[in-house]
Image (cartoon, rainbow, N blue to C red; front, side):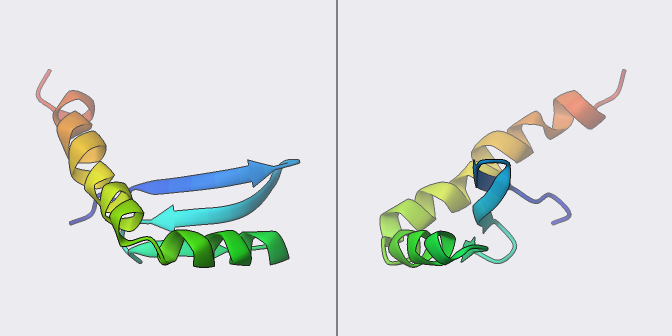
Length: 69
């Protein structure tokens, strides 16, 4: 439950949009990012695929990073 998957989109070194697995949706940080987040959040299959990345990527690799030596 402590594991968090974050996917951020940047443009010109400025974070535009971020998906956070704890929040479960995209959040926009600029005017364009808010529009992008709204577009992404209106696509339930895309939200589900991003949420599934926590199990596919993070939980799969946790044993590699924090496993027994």
